[in-house]
Length: 120
Image 1 (tube, rainbow, N blue to C red):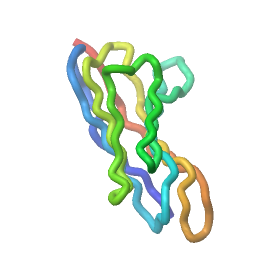
Image 2: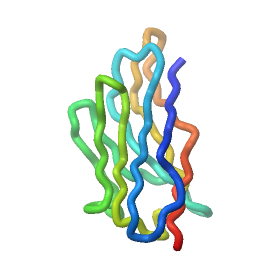
Image 3: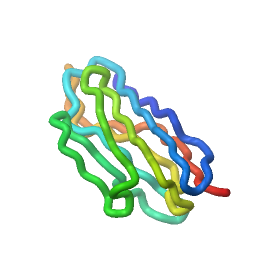
């Protein structure tokens, strides 16, 4: 059984920073990519950023220059450093692990979500 545990969400003022963490646990052989998605109220879930095991990164245009994704492969952990936060960044942020290989299967996993609220 693979679990993704997220932490680091909360309330922050506009212009502030937060760091999200997501740790994957279980009998994992490998994870192709890990990333963050978000769902704002009334909107569909969208990709924020992702990073492969080879450190290739993808960012949504709306976070370029403000957010940085990083990964510790040895710990199966991904981080999202969010700077210069804006009210429109308010959303539930979900961690994703893409193509997780275990002894029984290769599949994707999702975290439970962590709330990020940007407000004065």
